[in-house]
Amino acid sequence: MNSIPTHIRALIFDFDGTLADTMPLHWRAWQAVAAQFGFAITEQRFYALGGVPSIEIIRMLTREQNLALDLRAVAHDKEESYLRLLDEVKPVPEVLGIVRDQAGRRVMAVASAGSRRVIERVLEHLDLRRFFRAVVTMDDVTRHKPAPDVFLEAARRLDVPPAACLAYEDTDLGLEAIKAAGMLAVDVRELRGSAS
Image (cartoon, rainbow, N blue to C red; front, side, top):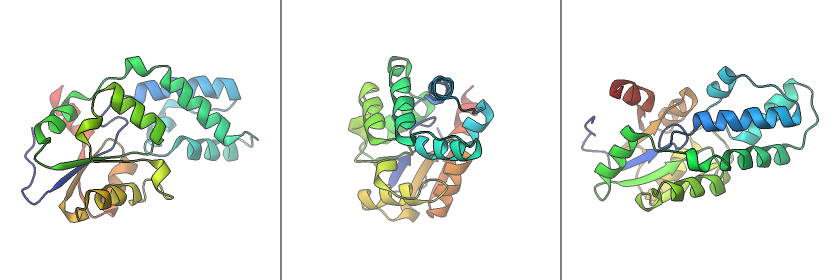
């Protein structure tokens, strides 16, 4: 496990693809709602938009494809499609090891582009909620990744300056947001790659 610099007082974790191995399940949910509502999204585009809230992705796609859809209804149905797969959600082992190792040593938060109702449900399902002093979601900020707001709000709620935070992410947009927040960043894709 990589050593954490001594000046770091807080760890902040993205959720989907970082703490929880959910991205393939989210892709299945996107396929279901795309078929239901008649819009197109490729798997490559889906992964490139990791860290962008579902409603913003739907807004982008409907504008590009000249569709008139109820954005909230589509986003809600996408969440419901995903929650039906909840029993398949597993933690990312390499990141779970860091969380367990650092519990009680550093304060921790979740900073996610997901909705509060979904993130809280999955945290409870994985029995991880107890590790995090704060959970910040798309519902708590107005600007989303690559803007730094979700990470800055997590640091604020932990009462730790951004420069004393280390944040974990699995997407390019999320890593950009961490750097914009003035925090150290860990690319979880590299952790997972080194463990395989």
